[in-house]
Image (cartoon, rainbow, N blue to C red; front, side):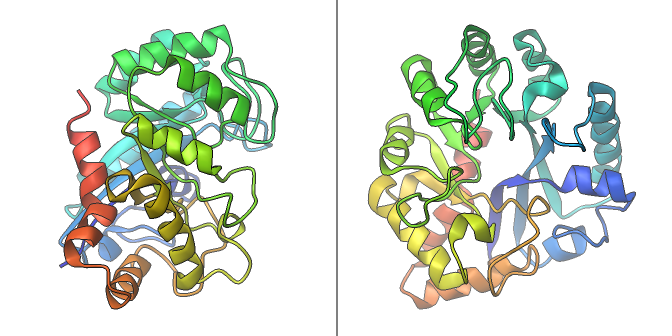
Length: 288
């Protein structure tokens, strides 16, 4: 059976705002959907929504976190790790990141969709600030990966000058295949690989390209394989964080169909297990 370990999903917020349950819900991810896989692990993101009318406060973040922890206790098929998507929910404070590591947080972006006191976001020319450098140092010393999805190019290259650990782009695609500011250039893909990091394949159609389907996803994946190699790619679906999924994908269960599609294209089971599970599992489980 297929094993899945995905680097980014926004399910906690969706469950909290809808007051639904992880076991069975209207989201992309639910225990009943996860049960079809022999092992399902997920990095669940808590997003600040900074710069939008839906931005959440620190108190709301902790309420969402507590709600999600209660939901995790009432199921048996989902293994969860946690991430921060926009450190505004901890005041962009380097001193607060160590405590989150103890609570199961394994990744943090530096921005979401707005500039902050740490760095510029993906449509910005702002680089990494001194506070951003302090945040990176604190996160990495606490065993928390820095996630460059949503980060500006200027901040990305500033980060590459100071990073002491592997870098992750949890949910980003290839700009060479589809020109979007949320996608990574070839030089960025190579740089992440040079840190022994990971790039997660994103399912959001505006990052894949028009009329996106499994074939379009394959183009991004094969470009990643060409530049990064099979050891540096994982899934980063952005499920429950994107409204428009590629043809053939309705929710988490679409990964089974994509797996079979790739198998039919000649991807053997060992390679598929690396991409769908093992690469991310090795980084997360060995992060300390």
